[in-house]
Image (cartoon, rainbow, N blue to C red; front, side, top):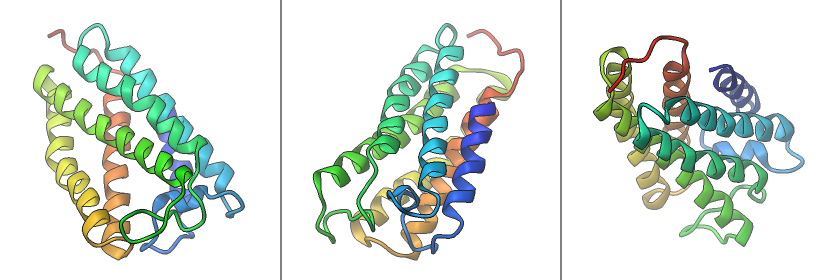
Length: 185
C-alpha cells in the first residue's frame, strides 16, 4: 500500500507540469524536469504490484499471477523510457525504444486490469466490491485509452483517458493493499 501511495504521489507531481494532451510517459523522457521522480514512481508502482501479488498468491492465485506479470512490465516501462514526445504508431514515427516502452506499458496496465477482474470474480466481501467497482469504472477507461491512442492519437481525450486509467489502477492497488483480514475463498 505504501509503495502504491508513493507511486501515486510521485506520478502526480512529475506529470502535473505536462499539458493534459500529452502522454503520461513524457514525464519520463531523459532530461525532462521530473524524469527521475517519474521513473522512480513507476518503479514503485511495479514493486507495489509485485508486493500485492505476493500477498494474494495463496488465496487468489489468478489475480496474483496477473499482478506478477504486470510488475516486470511496469518496471520495464520505467527503465526503457520513450524518446521525446513518446511517439506512437500509427500517427508518429517511432523507435525500437518507444515500442518497447509502449508494449511494456500496455502489458503492465492490461495485466492490472485482468487482476482486478480475477479478484472481483474470486474474492468475497469488501475485496470483491472494491474490485468490481474498479472493473466497472476502470475497464471502460482502459479500453477507451487504447482505442483513443489508436483511433485519435495524441490529444486531450487520449491524455485524460490515460491519466484516469492509471488513477484507477493505482487506486485499486492501494485499496486492495490496505491492511485488513482478507476472506478465504
